[in-house]
Length: 278
Image (tube, rainbow, N blue to C red; front, side, top):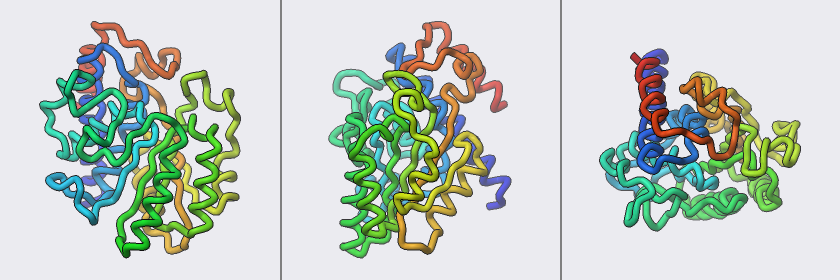
């Protein structure tokens, strides 16, 4: 497949992920939709380009593992799992409902393709380090992807795990940090300053890629560089994203951890997405 065709396919995937997330948000009338729209391009590249998995067999031993440390991004992750054909599209209508396999925060016991129960921030990277070590000991060539938020940069466990990953030379570990500068207590950089972030990860012994997380060619290049690196060190991709990406009236709305979307706006947002993709 040519580069242009591949990027066109990934753009379509990202559009559908955004659309699926909006449909789930409308079911409940709420959700972390700003994060879902902002992170859709990263998820499209992860599941549409970089990762090895079998939709019909989510527990296939040779699969790459994707850990959703920021469990409140579940609405985005479920959309990616639908796009990857791991979850059937008709289940979107059950989002957040009783007995649904799609609870509002990620739960590994409920959802096919969910590797960990996330939400208590700072847990994903330590789990990913242990998982990457275990796979290496078994001779399994799979990658472990740990997806986390910039709010998790506040957590000491994140940096302890970062040290451990470098110490053990975990070249099968790729961490993805969504930098949208928003967490529950306010702008992430004001709650706890984290810049210069690339320098910090490099000082901890990691290979670092920092990109515009809404620029598909840049995201593809960052994933490729992380996967193809020959050095025995862990890799991190820092993705600067825009909350509400793809829906201008949400892009410019006051940024909150939980963006308010009024009932008539769900269909308006879907219409805008559809028009932009036509």
